[in-house]
Length: 392
Image 1 (cartoon, one colour):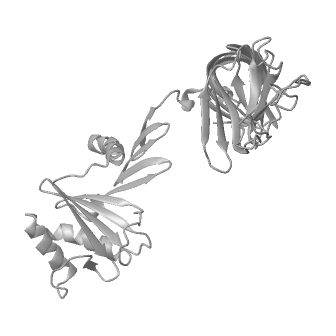
Image 2 (cartoon, helix red, strand yellow):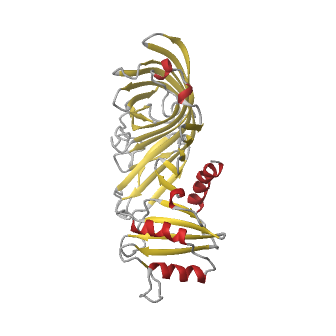
Image 3 (tube, helix red, strand yellow):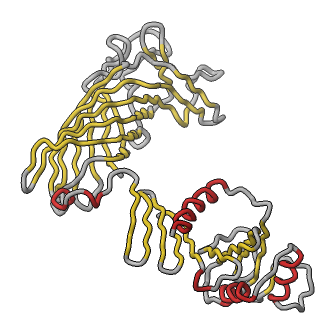
């Protein structure tokens, strides 16, 4: 069991590093024709004779039990390609079994690791997928997943959990919605407020009432939060909790015009890129991005996981600006214009947020900044908002 447990972690390391082994031999077998692909030896030889010759050339003795295991895998009725890893005398022989021919792009559905002299009943079966790595040998199994490691030997199960083990949560608590862990916010953002109409004899004007017109689907919001919660009161049908944590936010304001926001002498201005004829250069992308680190405070009510409404949260947040920049791409030439600047964006922001968790539906959120986006007198008096879904 100890060796099987260690094997699971070895598989992770080898899959990440994928470093070639100097003491290894790679063979490709055409299952349909039962011959070694690319072998220049006599084609009249049987597959067993070809393998014996190649093994002998590399100082390896192929015992009968090993051949029986290989033949069993070759003759198996499996539509997908498979792979066998044979460990003999300190050397690893990787045998890839293809349905017919080989084009260099096929993936393998499973892998078996066979020790020299072992029988087919002791083969180690390995499966690698999105859910993790699963190793099985007889009645022993090891599964290494995103939430931990599970070792099973007969009816005995041992678990090593990354983080908090949900099985240790009391049954009455498991029936209630839990707002904790890693949360991913995806949605759209915009601004509210009106820009003053400019009436000055200057071209191009530094600020127009249409300068904060945004592309609705192009202005995207992303947030990544690590959250915790404290129970404040408890009832039979609902719980009242205080949520808190740390979050990173990205506002992307995609402007729906060809004027680039810039930091002027004493305020932000919008200016186009003028061509040789004095006209505005058309932009395929024109945006301003602002990132923050945020401390959210989210009092919320949780209900049973069987309820139509499982969580209602009403709270707020305080953020500190980490970065801000502009990015514009010319439509015809794809020339990139990118500038990093504080753009007179307020260093600190604060606002309110509402969250709703519904059964059989992604969690919803809406955030509204109470503080203006720009410093007072340095830019238009607009507030940012965002809305969308909360995942994970």
